Length: 266
Image (cartoon, rainbow, N blue to C red):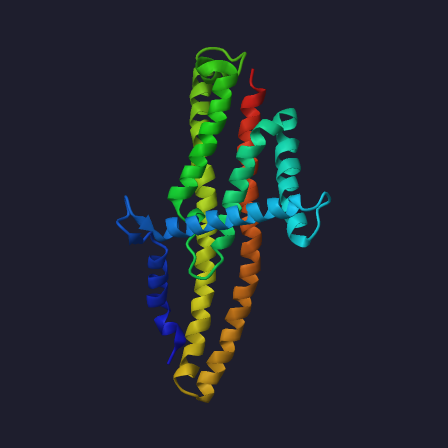
């Protein structure tokens, strides 16, 4: 029996499993698998943060791998994203950007749990995150310059009419395009990674299945091939951990860049 003969059916079932499925209610008003796992991620985030604050308060100097590790990540967001991009105004934007980073990071990591369907694996949640980022930097721009002043600032000064109108329209489109690119980039990277990992897990299972059904030399050889698929799966797993961290960093970094652009507009 060729183990790959069932691959098409398994892949179809796999892709179907990545669709939103209602656990309670329906897809519009009910609890879906993605919302459930997003809730798990948020609970884990709160547990980590409360445990961190409790342990941090016990000693004046940070002690232990856990406390130092969380402080390192917080300092990374503060120094490498907020301070380096936003300069003197970093403090007022740090809570928002840190919340973005940790929410995306914990969801990305929860997505590595077999069977997990985190929020960042669906375009609805990544779109909502992108919308919050979009509304935040637009709000900052309007707060600084007023609604008319912010809209007017999208067209560069010194450009003659009617070229300035054309440039203004392009900038309006570019501003809204930021929302789309933030949402799609995060979703596609996480969704694709989950599909690739699941594919190699299926291949490993298909090649070892004949040996579980009955011993033979052929089945033993096919089971040996599953070791290869498992090795690739473990390598991809490590890469996906890195990708999860990088995507949280990129999303937060771009959000800070957009904030910095409106902070500098006159």
